[in-house]
Length: 125
Image 1 (cartoon, rainbow, N blue to C red):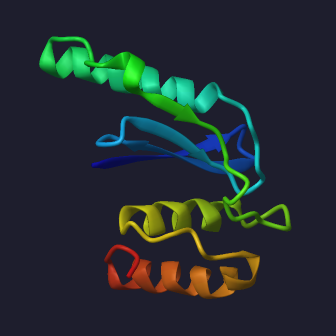
Image 2: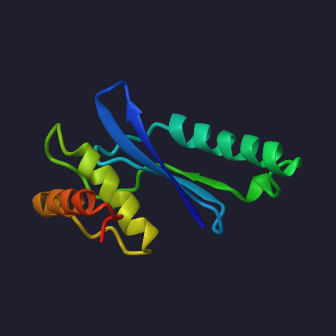
């Protein structure tokens, strides 16, 4: 019921856009707190294009969808290099319906979880 889009901005920053399909919501999760709507609009257009291509009909109930920019409660990084870890953790927590309760203080542990998952050839646990 969720589709995740990790997006690299100009080879310098990672953000996560999540399409919450059941809730009809496309939301931006940016650890730097950006409020740019470009990526949520692109993902929403992609969902429409894919639906039209695969189902041969327009995505229904377009007016019921909400495009949401980064919320004040979204965890923030406090440096210029942890955006990829934050992006991975956004997808991990959201995919399990966990609240986004991690912060910069947890990033070393998050990096270790990601590395262990890669070494074990499994999704983040």
